[in-house]
Image (cartoon, rainbow over all chains, first blue to last red):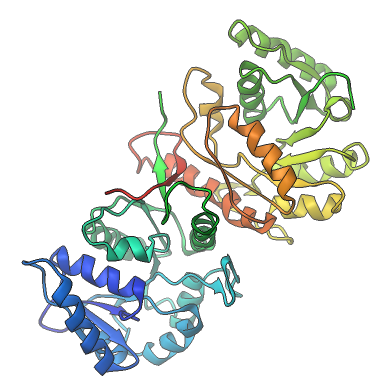
Length: 226
Length: 226
């Protein structure tokens, strides 16, 4: 445990990670971003701090290992799927005692309109298998557009479906994500990630095809209409 | 081709099938429901006709084979998953020249909060494999609550994600479904059904858990919020 309560975002220099880092910092959460290259993470964190509105918590940048060590409880994994397993293998020991929030979608390498299903069914289940049951893995935030995340003045236009095999960890993640001003729903066990991850290419497809009269479609859970 | 333009709904005596039959009849679509037992289908169609508002088209009931023969172009499959393949095997020849709209969700036999993924990935893909490429299969209407469907005075609270490998067939199904007063979205190839079908148990889970302040949750595609 570090002295300060910090959230780590690994792959925090990518578009999804940057958007999340700034949103959380704006919401008062202390954030450290990680990257394979610690110097680059530090540079990007300076860039982000310059964009943050007054009153936001300052973001720090460092390499993935130090960022994970610095996180007191929760670590968001926001790397491209191609780096998913390698990053987790490198950090397995360091993640002990922490919760991994896996937001990675296993998009097909040359086709963002499809997923390639991992052997375990989903990236979240793959992470849980790789880390073992001692480190809770929670799937979340798969369906939020990176463009939307980076437009800080814009509200997030979707609900967040959260899944995982350990209820306590899931509840902590739901409370964290709700700081972004979104509704979260407990979508069940980690196996629900097969569906939730696969929603992302469907949304990407809609955005590319211009079938929706807007870009960056999201998904919301709807009540009955009378 | 029969002389009258008719939509067949197989498994039309079940809650989902009944709700759809009445919604389409109310919208002016000529509907015939099919069941393994033709007499039961006829009885249920009488019950439904008594519930329909004035000006609706009358629903007919007969056995699944005759209902399929009577359909001029589109046949909705709305049987429990346990009867999915047997029904298709029985009707394969009769379906020639028609479009199959597969709304079946492969729910786990004793757990409506999970799907059992068919070997092909989804019920829609399984149907396409079973019928062969000559009969287009379109997945649709998986996520609409049967209770909502049967409350005719209530608007349907979700969008409908439509998937399949043949674009022309998908467009025809989208035009049909839009008669119910809902938005439809082209969600891509049949493999998208892996995700769309699996959304249903997530919604069922939310309804059972009372985590949402309403029952019969739906899913909608959301634009950005400014």
